[in-house]
Length: 299
Image 1: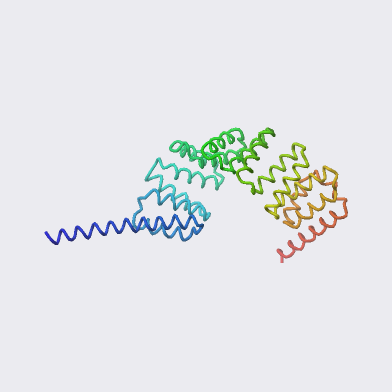
Image 2 (image 1 turned 180 degrees about the vertical axis):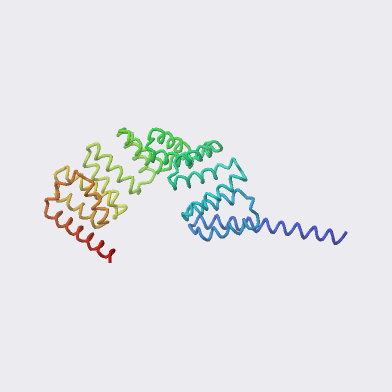
């Protein structure tokens, strides 16, 4: 009797140690993932699953870590394991939807986000990601509705305000788009791409001095922003400020010559500048560099 009692006590302690081990490694994995140390986080989750393969939360956290590493097939498998163990697990459906979106599988992504929202209708992440997929499908009206739902639950999500503005601009709702982008910048004043988009929007509205100011604000936060330089070039050109336009084009070329040439060939509005000596030299230099690069790659 004494022996059996002692054995029972030891067995319980072993179970407790096992539970403590799993919880410790799970928390370590979450902490490492939060620090961006995804490979190290993954080893912790795998340690937990060696002991207990039935935890949907660990499978789900593992899926998000794999998604950050760009290992999408493995991430999809992990989310699938989580869903098998807990079919109404909204976070796992969300993760699975993100994977489908990364793989450009829009219909499957929307289905997953809708399932996530069925189980967690107030999850702003599912509404936001659903909106992003709808943007890629050019279903802008529905996308705005999704972003609005996301913002009901997290009004400080500046990315949702930004993408909402993009959708409204696509529907030629200029004033409302400007209002949305201004809210995004109120939430995150140093968001360089929002300042760039504000400049594009104001340029479309023919408010050129304000557009120039927005592009300059964008560049104050990111000097290597070719899109902002391009916006400046177009605005200055439309105002007859040829030298300032040339300055902006030269700065754009310095950021990325290949992208500069792509933009130049696609933008008919600036083609008359090709007769300017400064731009002739710039284009010739870019063509020369391109030929040298192609020659090097062939050799």
